[in-house]
Image (cartoon, rainbow, N blue to C red):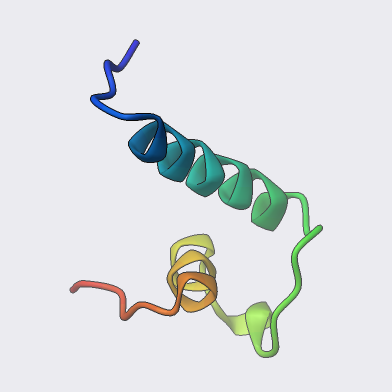
Length: 52
C-alpha cells in the first residue's frame, strides 16, 4: 500500500480513484463523453489538459 505524507494527498488520490470508478460505471456524465476515453473524461472533469 502507498504511504502518504499528508491526509490531503491521500484524499486527493482517493477522490481520483472514486471518480474513475464513477466514470467507468457511467454514473458521471459530461457533455461529449460518448467520444472520449476514460482518461480524457477524467482530465476534462479535473479541468486539466491530458498530457501526450
